[in-house]
Amino acid sequence: MKKKAIKIFLVILFVLGIFLGKRYIDSMTFDYTEIVNDSLSSYYVSGVINDLKPIVELLEKYNNDEKMRNNIQTYSFKIVGGWYTYLDGKYFCDRGNLNSCKIQFEEFNALSSKLTGLYNYKSKNGYTIILPSGFNNLKSEGDKKIAGLKKIIESPSAKNPSDSEEIRIKKCKVAVDCEGCRDGVCKCYYINENNNREVVTCQKEEE
Image: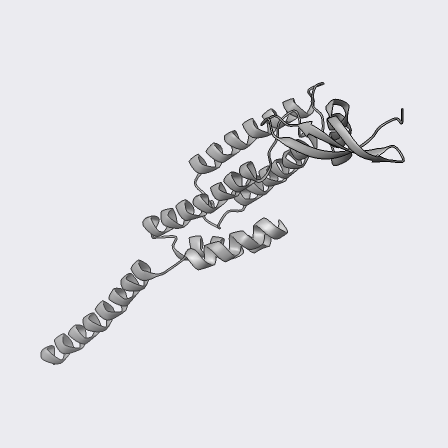
């Protein structure tokens, strides 16, 4: 009877070892990147907080695995940080490109709201999609960018770049050697900043 009990115990121990081993291997080899990528991409486009649910479910699933949670949060931060890098390089903003500055300003404000929404959407145990340090870093850098854009927009010297017609008129004012005039419209030559000659069509008063 004793030997039978020992044999049953060893069988249970063996099965339990297989189960725990499989669980450990699954945990070590599980690729969370696709779920995180898809979830964050959907949220970036839609702004719907529920699109982040798969990531929160992962954090809940790995409630007792700090390393896996940290990997998920770090990877999420990397993707969200990429949103800021992309938006920063998407537009060229200076005092001569007012419209670009305004559009970038609005998009950075929208991204800031998305970041806050993402950070406040937590698992049942209070785990955030990105770590607090990552959130604070992105929020701080984003706020600096927004403040800088606002300063340019409110600058009295800020303006939109000249359109093609305004550029043509400016060139005509300094154009020389006009020829082939017909009904007051001539082919003239303009020397650009690279000291190259450009052809420009200008209206010239008939003598």
